[in-house]
Image (cartoon, rainbow, N blue to C red; front, side, top):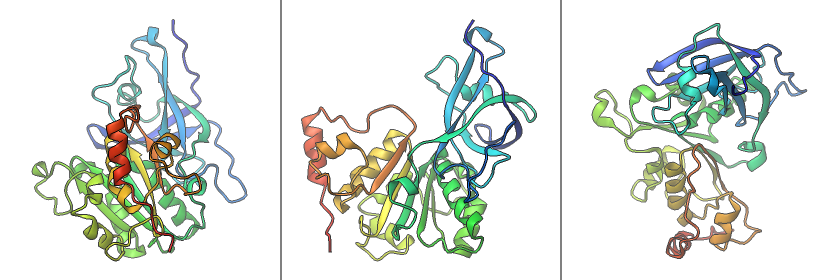
Amino acid sequence: MAKELVYNATLVERIDMTDTLAIFRVKPDEPPTAGEDGTWFAAGQYMVIGLNNTEKPELGGVRRPMSIASPPQDTEVVDFYIKYVSSPESDNPLTHLLWKAKAGDRMHARIHATGKFTVRHAIGDDDPRKRIMVGAGTGLAPFICMVDEQIRRDPTCNLDRWVMMHGASYDTEIGYREQLERLAAEQGLHYLPTVSRPQHCPDWKGPTGRVEDFFAADRMADTEARMGMAEGELSPRSGAIFICGLMGTIRQTIERTLPRGFVPDHRRIRNALNIPEEVPASLFFEQYDTTPIFDLKDEAEVARLRSLYQPASSD
């Protein structure tokens, strides 16, 4: 029989947004200890959670890393923003077990956050540039965590440096919408939600298309205006881009921002583009799938990417 997980946490609440999208609130038996700054992890990191397959015990337990959606000041309960995977690659998919769970059920949670997809690690907390967050679906989770951390530190803080782009198939899947709209209206957050299937959303009046479409050449000027920038201003001098989602979103965002001089924080991509080591990274990503972003063995593909990249001016 496959090895079972030891349960050390409780699912205290489940907030279903749709049939396939939910917030799972997990309470560890032994809460993490906050540091001197009142936090126990760096916003943007992830934890590993898991369940045992009680219906097919021969499959044992399954664990998966999940971005933390709640702020690092919270130690009693940890939030996870999760999408049901309808066509899983695994024979024992975690989301299929999670969707059978209810409040009060026990589960496994590794009470240790990890990962380098953080503002602190990427550019530093004191960097004055815009933080442009590009979340596809539940890729919004680490960005919600980051913004909420700022609010916990200063409930009246100005969020003008923060840009929250969020893409979903339908308007019902735009998570945390009321909260983000309020922060946009009251505290200066630049909030850009979009839906890719507007034909099924008769009440939706906002932008349409995938989230990476905000960077399409014919929409860039409008996007800059929505971010509070002048036309042509978007560059590594004015902002740093953070992307969380699937390969397609990451790929298209990289391609569409290479002409503005954005440099991916990825050694093999940098080397393929012949970007000097001294040029700092300005685009960072957390990938949900394992498909390579680019086929760097394809000489024609690499040549095409090199033709797109235009080094940013140092002026």
